[in-house]
Image (cartoon, rainbow, N blue to C red; front, top):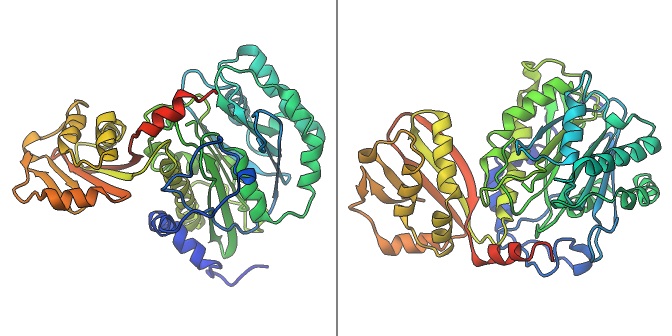
Amino acid sequence: MKPPKGKIEGRTSLEKALDPLTAALKRGAKPAPPTDASASPGKPGLDISPLAVPFPAFGTVGGVEIATARAGFYKHQRDDLVVFRFARGTSCAGVFTRHRIGSAPVDWCRRHLDADDGGKDVRALVVNAGCANAFTGKPGADAARRTASEVAKRFGCRQRDVMLASTGVIGVTLDDRKIATRLGEVEARLDSAMPASEQWTAAARGIMTTDTFPKGAYAETTIDGYTVRIAGIAKGSGMIAPDMATMLAFIVTDADIHPGVLRAMLGLHVRTTFNSVTVDGDTSTNDTCLLFATGASGAPRIGRVGDRRLKDFSRALDAVMLDLAHQLVRDGEGATKFVKVTVDGAASPASARKLAKSIADSPLVKTALAGEDANWGRIVMAVGKTEEPVDRDRLAVRFGPHVAAIDGAPSPSYDEAKMSAYMKNAEIDITVDVGAGRASATVWTCDLTKRYIEINGDYRS
């Protein structure tokens, strides 16, 4: 039913979505909900991140059903297969890793979405955890194709209308038979009456690897007076420095939007969300972000990028993506600090971004943060090594409200006691003014602890 013109239903959800950092901070103040071992599919033995946030409640996004199953890619008991089934006519767009050794599912999705009429009638998404199917050559590509073929037969669509994503160990060919044998079970669950919020929660858990909590975000907004919903899940904890880690993100809306418009919006918002977070500076072979529009809301079809009716939707989509991106950092392997790095006064936006990422990726900066040490000398090091334009004599560094350096020298008001107290916070803001211009950029990161080494030292065991 069409609401009155301009009316926005679910305003509370929208307002939270339009300020995702505030929402994340509020959620972060609450402990993550307790989870029993059987319901927690992450790697056994991993404690839930101290920065974890609860999984949000999801409304029903029309035109999509989701089911999970245990295909057996992991030795322990957990669901590791997730299947989305979409309504006919669903649009899709994707952004993928720029890694030169992309995975078989990345190759599959990119090829079909880039084809003529690509993304115009996508009917399914199949995701597995536990095997990345990357660096597997022709056998891996064949396994991806067979998976799409089996799902297409069951859903009555073309192979090209089935999107694929994988995450897990690199260099192991996907055993697609494990997926094929579970499709009957999956299909039965797709036809069940499981509430939408439970479907999304199960899906978020099913794609986890070394993640310690499931990641989701939800918003409602309007297009031409019709309420539309945006729901998304993501996974990622290590190998996170997306360049479009091991990052997967899947977002579904019941708006009716042309694939070309989806592609433009996704590309616009990825830059300041998923491409503005880093855990360890490593980009994955499998980075994938897929955006689907089912058209089930009844809102009019949007076929032009500049359509003004997309303004509120675009803002809400950006908020959902930023919320998910922040959660990746909050679940950084071994992380104890959620860190916002802002560079001001740069010569250009690209320069500001490079400077911010240099700070956020620096192991020396990140270990100092883990030790709760406001070692601004390491930040100066990270700035200077980029060879970007910087005015040394105007350089300033702040930790939260506390000035560590100004005009290229230690601040005369520096207070070690106040600075040390600030560094004990779980959430840290670092601001650097490089005095070379007017551009700025923000990147989010986490600290680097001994636990990161422990997790990655036995990743395959």
